[in-house]
Amino acid sequence: MYQVKNMSEQFKIFLSQLSETNATLDYFTDFKKIKGNVNKIAIKLNQLNYLIGKTDIKVAVNELYEENPKVFEVLDMLVAIRKNKNAKTFNNKGKIVMLDSYFTSPENICEYIEETGLGEIFRNKDVKNLVDYVFGIEVGLDTNARKNRGGENMSKAVSLFFDKSNVFYKKEVNNTAFPEILSLGADVKRFDFVIKTKRKTYLIETNFYNGGGSKLNETARSYSDVAPKINKYPNYEFVWITDGQGWLSAKNKLEEAYSIIPSMYNLSTLNLFIKKILNEKVITF
Image 1 (tube, rainbow, N blue to C red):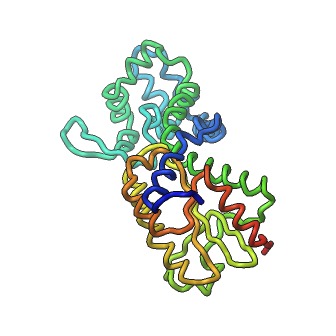
Image 2: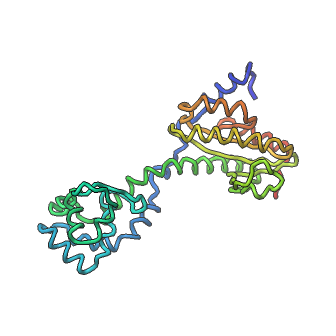
Image 3: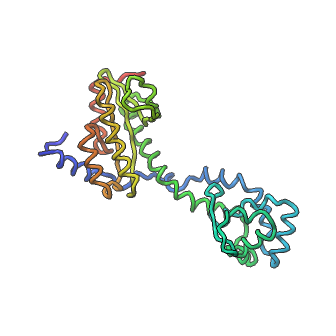
């Protein structure tokens, strides 16, 4: 692959090739998902618009509660908390309570609105329309999903490499499709790609990390464990295609994995893997 003295030098080259980003413009915000989330609660948000501009929030809440008490179930989103997060808070009596416990009576709802600061927002008309307001909140919350989209973008990038070279592959294949591999145990593992040649079957994992964190160490450790269990079978080989400068914060663990996993590539060296499998004659299955 490279004319270098040892594996340590090879790894340094591998590390130097890691990409700064794999973000495409659709990486930053998933507007389709955001629109869907807002549409699910839009009717209730429109009803809550009744509170905007009211000077006496207590009277307005009572009127709205009498009309439709369920409308207040979406109040958590007005402070950027999703219902499935099971958020807790201290109430004014010093007890820890579930956030949505405030939405069960007009009195508790008023306490929630005033204590969160929403009361002033409503009275001053700082927000004109709660549907638009929550759309903005959803955009902000969607940034938490960017790590997942980074992985999806990596999968797309690898697919493009394979497609360009007319390499036949299957995506999202469970290890149960290969019953002869007993070493993985009872746990079901899903591989991002599977490619077969006349020589062997390649089970492939892909990922991309823009930032650091414990997840990187866990991934490297996991694949270092999986690779030898697969590679012990002559007709199979584990392949790891990974990239991203997030690895610079976990380079020691990555180097350890690099020494254990023979078939490890980044986007810069992926063409070497493709050349290899094309020489072995890729087959359909």
